[in-house]
Length: 286
Image (cartoon, rainbow, N blue to C red; front, side, top):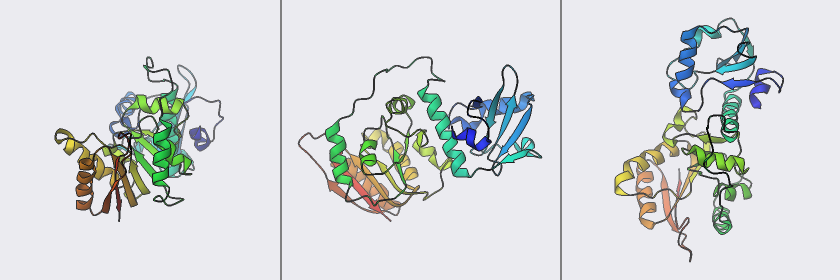
């Protein structure tokens, strides 16, 4: 894993992060408990410019325990970072190591008692091909892309066929897990997180494009939620946002939200005979 490279240790050495998810890195429930317990450790390594600390433990077995308060308002590791050996790492490298660790842990069911779905996710090839054809003339080559609401990675395949390897995020860990097991998502870029909290891990305009396929269903009762999701996710985009929906009304509502947030966009009729996936599209540009 990338974390082994960052710590400059052998790949066979056991490494664990103290927290179980990216969401927990904001509240630090386990890290706080560890710091209060005055844990005994044999060695400590500071990662990069204080991104985190790796502790080598010998009880109950020998392993490395990685702690980070980089994404939390509570800075509980300052004392541990003083006077320790340091290893080089950029913030981007460390973030990819974090994401990869949690993705592999999810895939290997480290934090699950059992997996409710053992078979690979069902992907509709006609939908993937049709979305690929729609996106080809719109998406510039070489851009950095974030896909929100990626689910089991079906629409992600359209991007990958175009040579785009996006960061992907979904709040449903089971959906992400299925896609990882089937090889549809990149473990270095597959994030289980509420899209409204992406700003804790990514700077504004850190992606060229943000996309979301089949946003919704958007109804009166959940419009405040979707407004928040779309506004927060779109802040990560530098140049373009693309959101597909089931209905024209949903796309027109998204257009209103995006236009009010400084985007200039159009709603595109993309209906087909099947009438299910990606029927309407909002494309917004800065």
